[in-house]
Amino acid sequence: MATPEAPATSSKAEDQVLEQPVLGSRRLSNVLVASAVSAGGAGFLLTSLSSRLGLDLLPIGHPAALEFVPQGLVMGLYGVAAVLLSTYLWAVIGLDVGAGSNRFDRVSGEATISRRGFRQRIDVTIPLVQIQAVKVEVRDGLNPRRRLALRVQGRRDMPLTRVGEPMPLADLEQGGAQLARFLGVPLEGL
Image 1: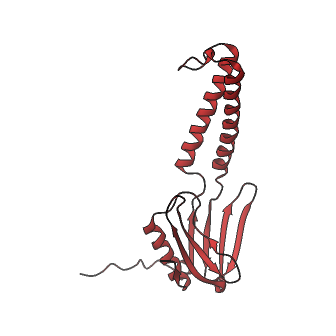
Image 2: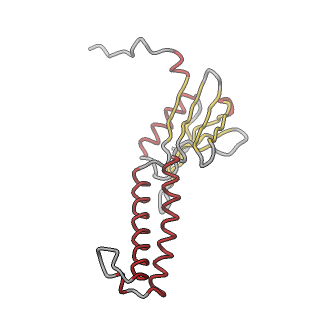
């Protein structure tokens, strides 16, 4: 049985560039957290307002029965804090902070790490000859960390993977091995 061959349309330029997209803060988990904080903040503010006006503005419980000082006032402060936090969370999600790409180009001899920040785009360019290894970091426990990083000559390790949710171990190993093969450097940490 003959094995299928790669399509004849693949060019040498495609083999010389490796681009990896990086997911930012626009994730379902962040949207769910922002939604929960927004709903909680609105609930606290309505409870505070209900205790101040003497009207039940919420369909559950009887917040109008609360004394405004101190319960209604404290509920209002919690509500304001939650609204401020949810505003920040929605801004981070809207701007998609942390999104970007890792581009490795053998033709130009450079690696470009790009990320979106709050006010500006962050671009770091590293000559490929300065990359010594691809490092896999795995730390389990209370604060788990699973990430890929570049070991660069004369610099700190340059992280390549997203912040937040730990990557599945199989994806981490596969991505690290693919990048190490492409760059022709060793894979450390496994």
